[in-house]
Image (cartoon, rainbow, N blue to C red):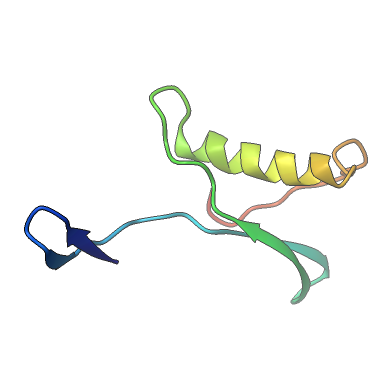
Length: 78
């Protein structure tokens, strides 16, 4: 990311780290169907990154009415 320093008018490179989560339906490996992706909220003093990932996923499921019919959640890293 390139940031503009408004006081000096110069541009500076800056690295911004973000988590990007992809949600797929995996009825038969290795075939998976893409469902969505999201970027969890940034870490706060009380909520750790894993919780922010879970909240993002739960909110997505709740918006689609599948939060009560879910049978299984699997993950590869979180």
